[in-house]
Structure formats: C-alpha cells, structure tokens
Amino acid sequence: AQSVAQPEDQVNVAEGNPLTVKCTYSVSGNPYLFWYVQYPNRGLQFLLKYITGDNLVKGSYGFEAEFNKSQTSFHLKKPSALVSDSALYFCAVREADSGYALNFGKGTSLLVTP
Amino acid sequence: GAVVSQHPSWVICKSGTSVKIECRSLDFQATTMFWYRQFPKQSLMLMATSNEGSKATYEQGVEKDKFLINHASLTLSTLTVTSAHPEDSSFYICSVGGYTEAFFGQGTRLTVV
Image (cartoon, rainbow over all chains, first blue to last red):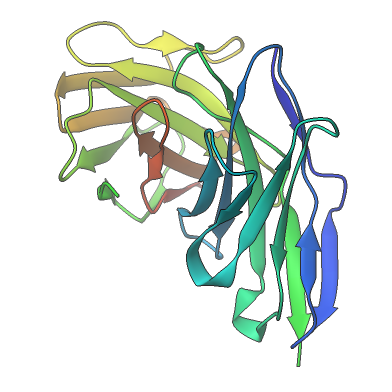
C-alpha cells in the first residue's frame, strides 16, 4: 500500500522568507513523488517531480524539493516566498510498477503575508 | 506537458437530473484517464480509472451505476452523474498521464440544488 502524509494543515510565512511544506510517504517499492499547487476552484498545476537521479529537484516558479530516502520525505521548499504563492499544495506518490493513478496527501494551505 | 480540457467549469443542476462532464486530452493520446473527486478543503480522492474501449475501473465505495464513465476515444472521457443529489455536489477533476507524469484538467464544480 502507498500513502502520503502532509502533517501541516496550514503554513504561514512572511513574504521574502523561506518556506517549507512538509511531505512524507510510505511505499513498499521505489516511489515516484510529485508536488502540485491548486488555486481556488482550479485544477492542479504541476510543480515538480522526483522519479530518479539527483535528490534535489528544481521545479516551476522557484520551487524545489529534496528526496530523502532514509527519512521517506519529499519536502517542498522555496528560498523567498511571494504573496502569490498563497495556495493549496498537494504532495502525491505513485509506486513504481504500480498503476498510473496518484495517491494524494490531504493538502497544505500556504499563506504568505506581505 | 499535456493540455487537459474539462468542460463545463461549473454546473448547477436540479436534484434528480443527470450531468455530463467531459475531459479532453488535447495533445496526448490517453488510453487511461482518471477521475477524482474533491470535497471542500480536502484532498483528491480517486473515483475511477477510465480505460479507452473498455469498462472503467471503480474504486471501492464508488457507485458505478451512479457515476457512469465512457472513454470512447484516446482524447475524450466523460463522467455522467446520474440522478444527482445534493450530496453529489463536489469538485470533479480528471487527469491523464504516463508512468512518470500526470496532468490535470481545470476541474468542474458541480452544485446540485
């Protein structure tokens, strides 16, 4: 079985400060990990993914994430937050050699204040 | 990435009527599409896997007779909510993708009154 945990319902950060949105996962095999962002009443926009290779993955809009196999984590980070980054963020996992559907975390609401 | 178009973006219908939601993959031939449901401030829950030319695969607890899925071509899957009730009000999102990627439609907000 595969699962994703996002331990924080909400993360608050001041504009210009670094931000971290946490994600841990559980799979029995090799994980494929994804981060998506969702704005109100909109679909999901792809930010980045880890499939294989370098543990540090760089994605869209200045976001990056680090795959940590020993801690089974894939935290999303950005060095300097923008007010426009305020949205709902989802971490998702797919286990290699499983089906194509993604298993999502519950989501973390990010609020960046001016 | 692939462009996925979902229509309509929002719909209001009366209780007891049926609503059809379309998911089109504009530049990606999708033998498989996925339908998710999202309740307010909650995560996306997989409802079913739509398979081109064959029956859809439904997740446990999802009524296949209520949520009819048709995947007649490599670019179009439809979800029909039959005999809709207020508890069916939700945000429905489709996705397409291969093994290492997934692209989502913009979602459909269904409100049943």
